[in-house]
Image (cartoon, rainbow, N blue to C red):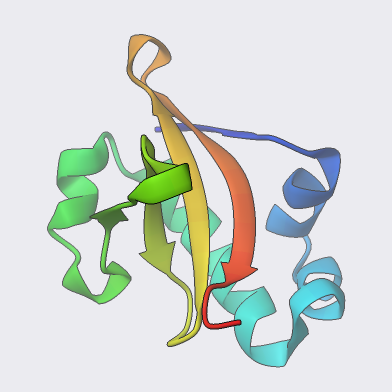
Length: 98
């Protein structure tokens, strides 16, 4: 699947474990890099649903139309799907517990 990024910082961190760790710490940083590599390797969202540990889920409220996968218990990677381009756009990495 084609993966695009909302910001240059998200893109740089996706391909540099060092930058990801500096931004989010030793637990979340590597999980982000590994998740991006996995997202690149799948063909569509249906394939993501088969991997239960990612906990792919649609978001509600102000995030309606976006999807998320869990990086850790408290952190998630949020993305939007561009069906026409068979791509996803990484929009944010966030601690949704506070």
